[in-house]
Length: 112
Image 1 (cartoon, rainbow, N blue to C red):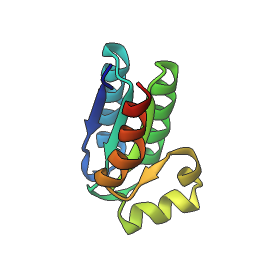
Image 2 (cartoon, one colour):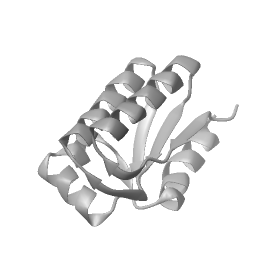
Image 3 (cartoon, rainbow, N blue to C red):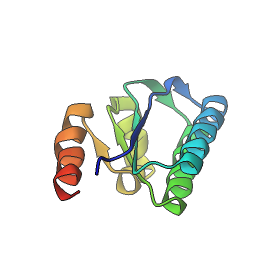
């Protein structure tokens, strides 16, 4: 049985507008189904409180759908915001997709 992985790649500033787009995408995924959602932040250069709210909403939406959420490729600015707001304790984060693949995907595929 293969895992159903969905990858989202927001870009620019993760603010109210892009945060709403992200929520919409996550809601669609929750409806259609996925085992894991990976939000790759490699192209996000800034996140504000609305962006953080969107990530928290994404986590809640996906939890109700029994879908795991992970984050990767967080830049220094976003990492600092995550640490200051304790988001780093809520959202499992990986250095990049390679680290995510080796620590999560390969493990889960071995189990399935």
